[in-house]
Length: 399
Image 1 (cartoon, rainbow, N blue to C red):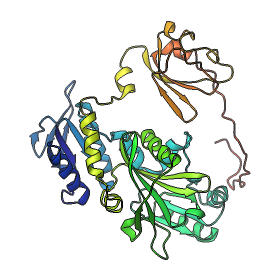
Image 2: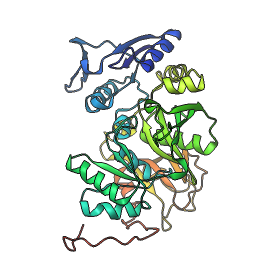
Image 3: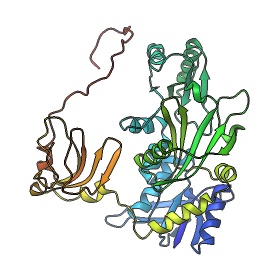
Image 4: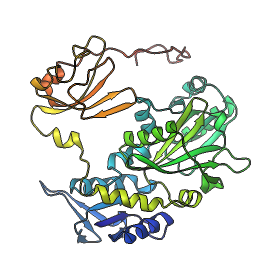
């Protein structure tokens, strides 16, 4: 296998370990500086140039994209995807995970535990937002912060309000997040490769700090995760579109709470604390996948005129509820069920004998007009609770 590792730090521990693991398995590997690429776009012929020369053919690419070059880095990864080069970290997965707000927005529609979070812009919305997440103390996070930088614990509402106002005046967007007190100073990092957790560590903050990042002096130790933590980490990575990810979770009283999904997780802390060959597990996975890469289904299938991919959510009034997939008439309408989502379970390529239930979600490919007829009229989603809003000083209006 001919492999490229995208990295601007060839001597960094993670890059070196990936290279060593690849060479140990007999792969031809090169470390390429992400910013030395040029992207060429021409009808039917996307191409890549590196350091002024047309890039040679590669079988796979492992991106190590730093936060400071995310837009350009994801564009380079996207070009590799257009050239059908396998990557375990998709361009949209990197972009989604790098933006803390976007990542939580995506996870929030799934049955994944996350800390209660608010995102506001107006000063008069700050105190109501703090109240909605449970009141002080609260965590304040910069959207673009990494390795614990830009994460602040505000002990009181007044302190939180002052910090947020100062950051907003500096044109820095922030998240207001519930403080999970029972997990204060500790978190879990699960290293996901494919559909399994290959290593996990618990990080504990140094005395006087609530941030457990190893880069900030935290101490890491190996930990055996129970099924709920393993499943949460794997599903969070998959939802983000990442086959290699570091999933950070708090140990909440109601179970795992996902804080962040890292698309370029470091190897030093987790290999040191667990004494496991995580880099080797990464290379094993990439080597198995390179000859059978996953495709962007929506991009590939939606090019057919009048055909596309959509998700059907089966409500109580759906004509499909109570029938098997085979007897549903979907195939006769030129509709194929690709996956069935039932609660937290995903059933790929479900059997025709599978009986459909209320709240099932079907990912389908087929004739758009036929699928449109099966989508119920839009209804507002039911809210489990209603919280009073503070009066708007600018007067009533329609959002």
